[in-house]
Length: 137
Ligand SMILES: [Zn+2]
Image (cartoon, rainbow, N blue to C red; front, side, top):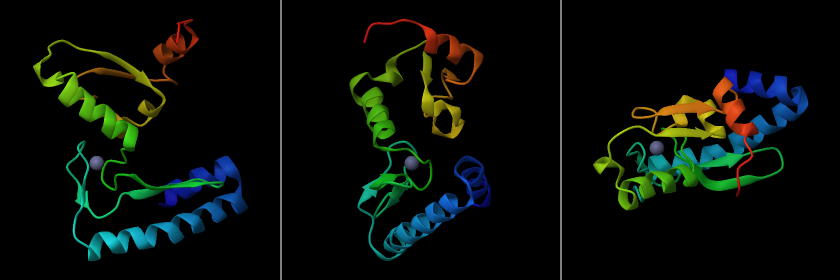
C-alpha cells in the first residue's frame, strides 16, 4: 500500500494522492468486512478466489463497484477473456504458443496467460513496434 501511495504521489501530487488514498480506504473497508462476515457468492475463474464481493476499482473521479479480484487483481474483462479462452476457444485442447500484447501486461501478475505464452507489455520494445502498426479495426 505504501509503494502504491508513493507512486500515486509521484504521478498525481501529494494532495490528490491523499484524496485518492482516503477514497480507497473508505470504499475498501466495507468490502473487506463483507468478505469476512458474509458467505461466499463470487468466485474468480482466474485464481479461484471465493468471497462475497470483489474490490471496487477507484480513481479520483470515479469508482467501479465490485470490480477487482482481491487475490489476482483481475477485472471483469480479464475474467471474461479467461472464461472465453477456456470454454469457447478451448485453449486447453490447443497446442503451440500465442503472441499476446495488451496495456495491462505491464504488470505480469495480470497476465493470466503468461505461463504458456509470450506476453509483451506496450512499453516493451516489441510492444512499441506493435503499437505503431497500422491495422484495421
Ligand atoms: Zn482472481
